[in-house]
Image (cartoon, rainbow, N blue to C red):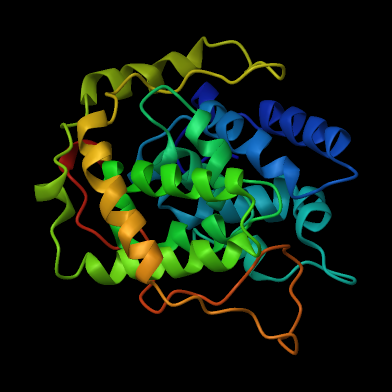
Length: 277
């Protein structure tokens, strides 16, 4: 899985194959549950900048040449997996969507919030929320997860509908409200991130029995998350719930719902800072 002109240890395929084999063995009775286990471990194994992760060639190579069996296992419908799971956009492609979920929903080195984003049976966070531009703002991402978690714990019926409704409301409100003013974030610790990436040359394989540690590039300010949660809770109570129709075309993903209208995708259509290139 080597990008052009790169022979770095971090691009080896063997650790990826081992992870995927373990995921298929562990979750053979519940394929969607593999997402929450695999996302942080894939991210901690494939250590790279966002600019590198934005290169579709890497993900296409991984899906079509290194692990097509996993793509079919995880995303097959009646017979085959959709082509977009092999070479689609970052929020649809089998492996890139997991890497980006871990990247955008982690809290610095803490991958625990990623488990909420990959909640079993509610694929709407990955299928809908992951697409939003506002998720680039880390306090927004963490505040959304906090509200989602409270909904999941409360056992609301059809939680995916609530995820979609709130995601749409937050995305729409973000066009008139400046979240980074209401809830400022800290600047990323660039050196720490690059050090974490460089450590891939000598780092041992990720553990299967506990979460790995991500890059220690700065935690999300909890005061900023606390400032957004009441706003998002209010948006949730006011957001119209668009329930799925019984006659809607079935999908291969439990919990998939109606897409949010404005979904250009995070990080990949933006001007990246020079340190990410």
